[in-house]
Every structure is written in C-alpha cells, then in structure tokens.
Image (cartoon, rainbow, N blue to C red; front, side, top):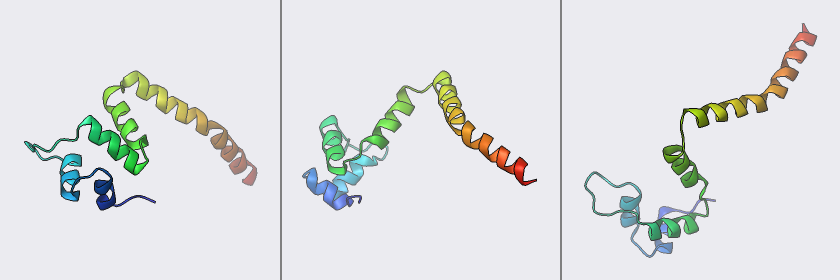
Length: 92
C-alpha cells in the first residue's frame, strides 16, 4: 500500500506542502529536493524503481539502448505469438 503524502512528509520531518513543492517545483521555486531528501523519501516510500527508471531513461538512454530494449521485448513475446498463430491455424 502506498503511503500518503502526509505520512511521507512526516517521515522526512517536513510539512506536506514543503514536500509537495520539493517533488513538483515551480519555475524559480527555492524549495529543491536535495540528495538527503531524495534518500529519505525513497526510504519512506520503499519504492526506488520509478526513480531509477526515470534516471536511467533520462541519462543513460540512447537509440542503441532503446532498440536493444524493444528487440528484447519482441524476442520475449515470440513464443507466445508463434503459439497463437499455430492455435489460429488449427482453428481454421
């Protein structure tokens, strides 16, 4: 179950409005999420996968990596696709 923003803010010892501003800063906002805040927030939520995925996509992604990822997904789907084709052929 996902913690509420209020619970997360309490874990970080800050007001919910401050945490909200740090997670969604407006242009020119002085409230920034620093590394200590990020680590505490990840510990509070218990879910680092979304942050890791975001950072990987933003800083490590390129055309070669995207192509490899898509190819890997398609290769993983191949057995199911071939089985579905055979089932469709057998049904006709």
